Length: 373
Image (cartoon, rainbow, N blue to C red):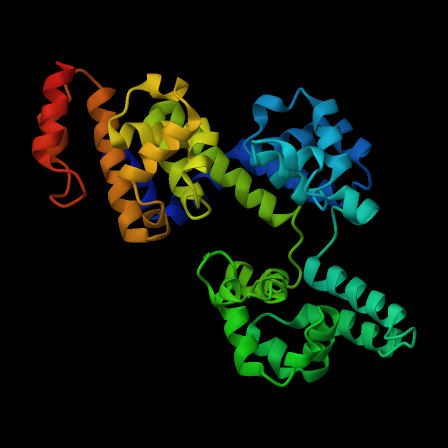
């Protein structure tokens, strides 16, 4: 049997091919086709939860399959939305629920929730709202003609260059998001758009004025590429999550350590504190394994656990791909020592199969292996 480290490397070496294999599974193809063919027809929360096939697909995509039975709970989460920081979904410690509500935001968009595009519909809504409000009660934007032009032509925009090249489209978008004072500074706005918002240290995220990060999130070419304008949160984004979730579940059926490593790698970029690690049981297990902490640590005072993690792990390293790779190598190696894939795999063979430089000494791992024996 392939050990944890090698199994993980085989999957992540070419993640696109690994996901393609998942996508080609007959059951996955069938369920995805049903989802894409029908999700846009849903106009209410009641319709959504009553279509068990659609609802189960959505729940699995967001890692919530074990809660698919709790429809009343999920209805309450969706009804409260995420606009209010005190909403039901936002108050839950597990942020998967808020992520789910963000994908199916009936509270904010009503019957348009499953067809709503932030770049197309959201920007048009903002523009019209500002035009109707005006300044001192006097409309300062022309209404229907500008919006008609925007809706007709924005769908053809596939890049930052395309958006900046059409002054009428760009001006419309900037005014809609309250950034009309920066219309003439295309160099600045190009940096905002090209950097995206996935990286906490991106140009847009570093700006004190959060309108720039909001704008980059709406016109997110950095993440969605050519589909940025027509991106609907409840469509392809959910399918992508479903594929990744299935990949991790399939890996976990063979080796739980591989599933944990894949999950941690996926979540790492959004982690900014030790408390986030501790709030997620899977992430916490990875960290305890990496740091050589006993499972009993989970019952210790939360502040003491966070302090220990901060003392022994630089959270900022999780944003660095090279350092994250070393951390995952360390985890998969230590997981294999603690949970051998087969009796024939010795601690020594595990160590020999690893790269020489990956953040933990061979002596330390050998000592751990001896302690296990």
